[in-house]
Image (spheres, rainbow, N blue to C red):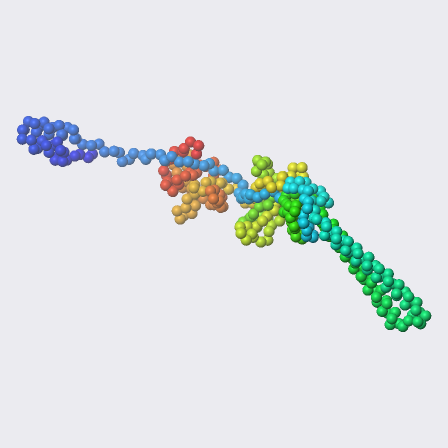
Amino acid sequence: MTCFRPSSHPTIRLALHIRRPAMAATLLAAALALGGCKEPTRADAPPPERPVRVATVAYTNAAETRDFVGVVRARTESALGFRVGGKLVERPVDVGDRVTAGQVVAKLDHTDLGLQVASAEAELSAARSSYAQAKSDEARYASLRSRGFAPVAEYERKKSALDAAASRVEQARRSLDLARNQLDYGDLQADADGVVVSVGAEPGQVVATGQTVVTIARDGPREALVALPEAWLAEARRAEATVSLWAEGDHRYAATLRELAPQADPATRTYAARFEILSDDDAAPALGMTATVTLALPGEGPVARLPLAAVMNNGQGPAVFVVDPATSTLDRRPVALKGFTEDVAMVQSGLDAGERVVTLGVHQLREGVAVRVLDGG
């Protein structure tokens, strides 16, 4: 018990200074009655329970998964361009149009190409005339030589002239074939069935040889094109891949890795990867759709996934606080971690399924503290 000192009470000090004995005695008695001794608080009272949120331990497969967002592309995209230069006069197809093999998708001005064909035809006609004259001279000198009226050297010259004329005829014929091919090249044709995904030139534009005019995505397998970081290059080859489309909700397609770039992109430092989407042609996803490729690595035993905030480490290794169901107190439990992500810790051992682990504020708690589990935790 703690008592007050009478000399320190203001009422008693006032009574001591009052000269009238009766009044001073009355005030002194009142002060003593009001002061008395104070009853102290009990030091052995139990501390209040700490409210905590918990998570129930459940072991699942330890397969690590990672999602990569990309787009749906055709396996083969043909960038078509003219094999000769010229002025583009017609492009009968546009983006989104379906084309078939052999269909004309663009045309050049044929005026100059037609003139080249006419010139080659004239050269061939002239070469044939020269060949006919040389052949006649060779036959005549052969007859004279057989009768002894022409020297051998003169006959040899006529025979050489005939051989040269024959070569010029062959050269003119090849030039005519080339000119006709170039005339055919003035019509750009689709090399396979597919759909036009982009155009690179408009009518009236002068295009160079090889310049892309139309890009066609061929019919056939569809693929998901994604960018992989360096850490997932080896894992991508052994992981199980699935593809989901943003437009189709939870539906997933099986997929396989078909192509992995050998060199990183210089800007993003990632590697382009193509995953073939295994589906029927009728159910093939549309080109350009947003695709999410999920890579799942093979599991190596069960793990319990807990919030990363539930794990503490004070220099003695990772540990968690487990709520004792009998006493509602905390038990510090060392655990072994298989790994962790940005917000999840994967516990490999140290906990039993069904136990409840504190998930928030573990660094402000201590072992043996009484706790109260909040609703929903």
